[in-house]
View (tube, rainbow, N blue to C red):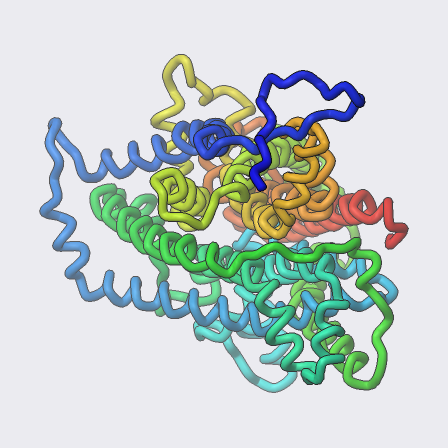
Length: 579
């Protein structure tokens, strides 16, 4: 039997029923996807590609000619090869260790309901926004000379790779817990229970049912952790000492200390090529593992632990969080309260006026709180807009090998490049490219949130995309058959399912914007510093008062972050009554 397809311009049937809306053609689908990428592509071209290209050109081009002879010399240098080797293997080790610690934590926060869960989930994210120099100093106080381990057992871990790896887990634990846990909480547990009813053991059911569903989120979290540790700067600089150096540390040394832009440009290209290769492999493999999933309300999947094994897992995760997260943060608070006459609030009072910080600032350091919140709010809005459009386009990309599909998969990889590119390069690039009309932004406050949004967009995409791809396309088709426009279908089908992921992404974008330092330090105006910039300025000046104020301001940053994330937790769970 042959059924005639309804015409696009057909009039409504006489019985009052709306005729079926035909599915868009492949050409229209491709045009829609490419149209959604227009804003993200323009954003990354202007605020990422052009600044980075300008810095590279400054180092490799002179008198109108390209000079590539220096490239072979730098790549053949034994010290550079050692730096590249250490950068790669410590990033891989840090990623593996973070996943090993973070995946049980993601399960606990996704499936277990226990007192203080939302508070603890917000606290776990706090290290992610702290300036690396501050967190490095906190770990130095724990692991270095005169630190906690040295006082108790006479053990020092500073200038060892273990200090670097533990600090990286401290930073990136939230990436795994929130990215993987956000999807895990929405997976229907009845699918795994059905496998167990058919005879599969608990481990086998998890391995064959849950793990494949989580694979895209695990891959996304692992990719983000690897990129952050691959470009690690402050942690390696403070805890590694002169023995260890990453590409990011070497780029900074060549740029700021030796003023050798040619070598810095070659190292930037090397870092860029390594990250691009990794992203190409990720884009090629992860798409094959994604499929439609059954998603449910996260409030229905959380329950109190049952049995000794689950309680043991809960307490093990809480112990790890205590040792790796709360203990270093406690060091910050303790040092902020320690003065020459014992504990007190002297360092906090000194933040109220520029004179109290030795004229380090044009304004009172405490004003950096308002600046950071305003910048982070704007950056989060930009990141959600750009990342949301990009994720929507990528979610609609088919698995085929057509030119449009390959273009979108390549665009997926490009979105992650800011996480693997030197922030020093981006900051300098902003100054030399955005200095002429129509994009003369050197004196505009928008420059800071735009730079911060560059780092926030990848988090939005990697958090929202797995959930969007998990939405069954048949639901969209059914909405179209019932007469819904593409916009209404997205609003009625996609948005309710990704609401939780969007709020998780907003929390990430806001957090990384609050803590962004590498690019912001070059473009923030003296009269409007952010919290990380203010902390770095205080740490850069000698004196116990400046150091104490840096710790106090870091504590303020920690509290602001925790309060912001708790607010997002409340917004995220208002409908379910989970909070």
